[in-house]
Structures are given as structure tokens and as C-alpha cells.
Image (cartoon, rainbow, N blue to C red):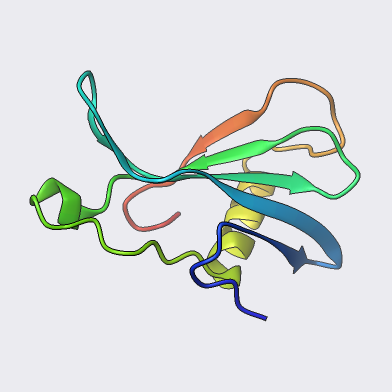
Length: 106
């Protein structure tokens, strides 16, 4: 089932359930300019969170209206896989790991 226009959900990646939620929508910061959205990932029954920070949408950089965020299951699944490849260990303890998604979505 797709979670388009939702602020939270659950995806299955390689047989494991991961909960996700929209942590922050794109917003303006006087210090940094536009900051993109952030998605929180957490494997069910585990402790360590991963935060996926996206770049600001190009439309905001051009001064266009914000529009509606589009977060779907395939995007969240790619985020989970990318975080795992980058070294996220959901079963370990510690502070949330922060990952920056590049402009191409990798």
C-alpha cells in the first residue's frame, strides 16, 4: 500500500519492518537558507534511529510555492537500503545516525 501524502508509515525491506515518519518539512532558516525535509527511520523493536536529510526542493530555491510533499513507500525503502549500506545498524545503541541524501536521491 502506498503512503503518498502521509506523515508516517511502515515499509518492509528484505522481510524486515521499518517504521518511518516525517521529522521535518522543508523550512527556511536565517542561518542556512532553505533546508529540506527529514525522514526518521526505525526498525521495529530496535533502538537506533536513522535520519535521512533531503536537499531543499529546487522550486523553493527558485522562490516558487512549497507544494505538497510526496513521500511514498519506494522512496522510504530506498532510504532504508541506503542507510544500511552506509553503516546504519538499527540493533545497535547510540545517537541517531544522520545521512544526507544528494540531489539525485542517493
